Every structure is written in structure tokens, then in C-alpha cells.
Image 1 (cartoon, rainbow, N blue to C red):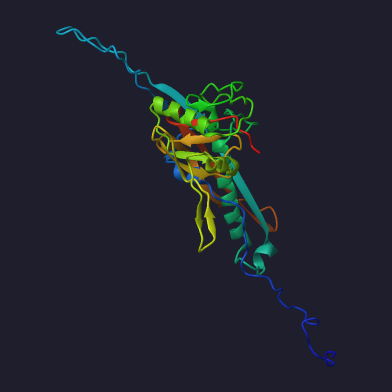
Image 2 (cartoon, one colour; image 1 turned 60 degrees about the horizontal axis):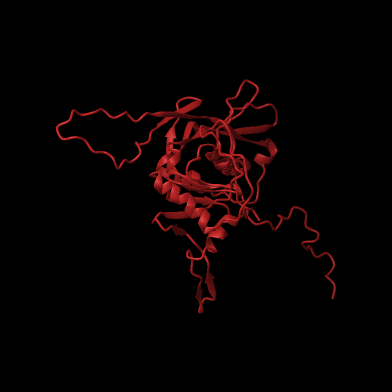
Amino acid sequence: MTQPTNTHSTYDHIGRREDLSDIIYDVTPTETPVLSAIPKVKATSTKHEWLTRSLAAASGSNAVIEGDEATTDAANANVRRFNYTQISDKVARVSGTQEAVTNAGMKSTMAREMEDKMKELKRDVETTILQDVAYVVGTDTVARKMAGLSTYVITNVSKDSGGTLATGDGSDAYTEGTARVLSEDLVEAALALAWTNGGNPTMGVCNAFQKRKFAAFSGSSTKMSDGDKRKVTNNVEVYVDPLGTEIRLLPCRQAPTDKVFFIDPDYFAFATLRTFASWDLAKDGDSNRKQILVEYTSEVRNEKAHAAVYDLTTS
């Protein structure tokens, strides 16, 4: 059969709203587990400074003569450490018409753009905190940059013999050696160094590839099968080494692919000179612009509190 004459169908109608869902399905990863876990502090200058100190080494010869005059021990010296603040931003621009029309999935295009830009900015910040990059002091023509975590963590490190550690003050980066497969021995070696030096890391940060390696450790996981639900579990959320150090493993999409960090959150902080904020920018035509910005750095309060495994294969 054919359609009767003069029937007004959807094929003829002009102005019919598209069958477009009012839900926008966004699968972009936005989690920032490290930024969420560490303390937040206030920076008061573009050069953010803090003090670290260590106890004297333990001695088995600490014996004094009865009645002897007391001898003053050397004071534990403070070591000044610093990092520079970095400015990161995102800018959204929406035409006047686009903001005025009715849009599927949102009341305001600008509001949606700013929501997205905030998520993107937080991911950029987390990537910057964890990357292996030395600080840049900055000039009128060169952007100031903060130093990443591996430029400070140099004591409790498992690395390839060909790798060269950074100085430990943020001024230079780690020089990579030959890549190795992440193993339980490498992890235990780094955590044993931390334990020996008084560290107590509780948080393990790694990307998906290295997280899967933990699941393959001989003593770390048990595969469980639920016959009724047909579910197999092969996951390691907490790793405990032979010394009893308990590490909560956090898969992080922004983590370096060739490193695993073991962090004590009490000794690693996110410092902001200017916290996340947004504002309108001056109009220069038939559009609106907004900027979202943060000025920040990290504070590695004592690098001996942390541990790391460097020089890892990534595939």
C-alpha cells in the first residue's frame, strides 16, 4: 500500500525537533586520585619553600661514663627545599547565538564548557605533579614550571643500574636506564629502603599496565569465582610487603607509564598560590569568553617518606 494523498507525515514536516537525547554521554576519564588524596596547603610566593630534617643514625655505642660531664650532641640541621608555582588555565569561548539557542542536554553551552574545562584542568594538574620534569624559574617570556615528584624522590628507589637519579632538589630530572618488567622483588626492594629510612608510604600510584602486574604477583592475589553470578575477580587493592608495609594501590590514568610511586600523603601536599577560580574575559565581539585558572605547586615535605620503582617496561 501507499500513503494516502495529502497526508502530512514526518517526511514532509519542517521544524520537527531532532530525536536527540537530552543526556550527553561523556566517558572521558576525569578522576584525579592523587590530587584528591593529598593535603592542601597555601603557598604565599611563587617560590614555595619548606624545611626537612632527619634524625641522626642509630648507634650501638651510645654509652657514657658514670658521673661524666654531659656532652652536647650535634643539632639536627634543617634542609631548605622549594618548588616553583606553575600557572595552568583553560579558556572557553561561546558565540552569542549558541548561548541563546535551545540545546539538547544542557541549559547553557558556556556552563557545560566550563564544567568540561574544570575537569580537564584538574587532569592537567595531576599529570604535572607526577611527571619527571625539573622546575623552570620563568621569565617575562618563559612560563614558570613546577618540578615533578621524581625530581625529589631519590633515596628509596629501585632503578636500573644505567639510570641516574636526580639531585633531589627539583633542579634536574631522572635519567632513565634500561626498562625492566615490574616484579615483586623490585617493589619489595623500594619498600624495604623506605622502611629502613623511617618512611611509611601507604598509597601506591601507577597506571593500568603496572597495576595489572601487581595482580600477577605470586602472593598478592587470589582469583575468586562466583559460580552463581559467573564472576571472576582478579584484583589487588592492598599490597602488604614482608615488612608489613601496607600499600593501597590507586590506579591513576595520569601516572607515568614507566614508574610506580609509593607515597605517604602526610609528607606530600598540593600548594596553591591562587586556587581554582573562573571569571569572564573582556568581550571583543559577538561571543563570551571565560577563563578558569589555578597557580600551584607540590610540596615534597620529606622525600625519604616515599619510595618508587623507576625504569619499567610499558607494554
